[in-house]
Length: 346
Image (tube, rainbow, N blue to C red):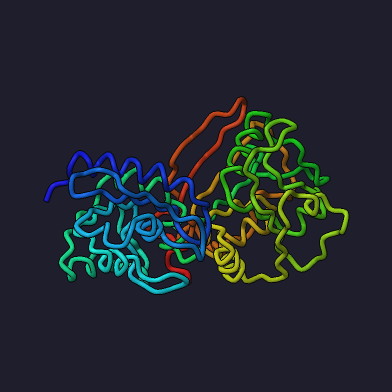
């Protein structure tokens, strides 16, 4: 059965509802229930971990039996597992829903399979309506599901000759105002910003996302990795969010803990040792290299040992964009498919 115009409008509405839910461990999902005549009779969205999923929230707005013969329009395939809530596929079947239209398949090994369960119960199912819009909405969550950990962006700023600082350690500012503003916008789009203890001790960064002197509305959670203690008066301890401190070199363990906390996107900012460790471990999904037209020389490289003993072992990247930022240039890149990449790390 082809998707009807009423169902298309309902999917647009479901996408609007989905963004009301919080970003976190679970995806943002919206649902609309249509009567057999194509009228909206109930709406719902997922309001956070442990709360009813969007389909169940919509069904709960109806009187018993009111959903019989109705159509459920959902932005994500109804789940098929019991966690803190029951399977949405089963809830729809028991409510008497006769047809389900959804945008995206659930990629979860445990939660997926709802469509097959619905079809086995005699429910008509149509998938793929507004899939691109639904994918854009929960792209971070989908990436985390695929990778088994948060999506990691590794960023650094460097001179044209690949240095992160002058010989005396001074580094403010290698890049100009346009590049720094771009970094802050990207910080504001991330769930967490990660540095090593060396950066905290050397630079005392606030790890906030700013627009001039004002804070962006969304602030990434500050994360510090390393064995050295962070001073009680450090600027990071005055961040709007409580910082996370990890005294470990096990980056996968760090990422796993962050994912359990609902962190889906990670912005690794420094310094060279930590950035190199993420790259060497195959945990850099995106690279941002801000290049300034200056020469510094000296030993303070932007990237250090990443486990490349010869040119044959070079870590190849695909350039996605070259972005001019005032006098500076931003290279946005990702690993090639043949590189040791995070998808293979569990």
